[in-house]
Image 1 (cartoon, protein in one colour):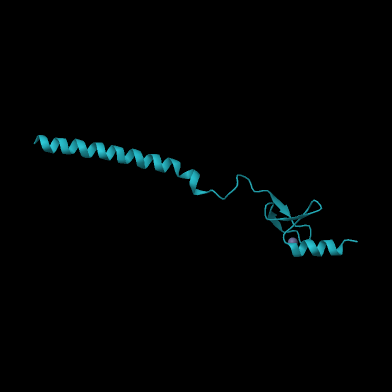
Image 2 (cartoon, protein in one colour; image 1 turned 135 degrees about the vertical axis):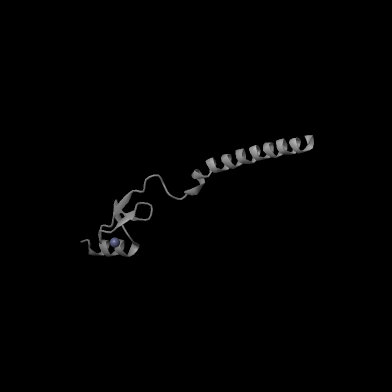
Length: 80
Ligand SMILES: [Zn+2]
């Protein structure tokens, strides 16, 4: 009878440690779930076609933003 009690206590301690570790892992997970999304994505408008592109993906030239190098070249060609 005493052996069963000791086993139950041991199982209880193991379960407590297990749940503690699981809670520690689950609280640290949300920061790992979205590592590639910046806190605020600044959108810039293409000077040539007007499409909105994230600033880090936009092509910049002379302080202007473009959706692609093709549109940058087209805009600069049209410029007198
Ligand atoms: Zn464009």
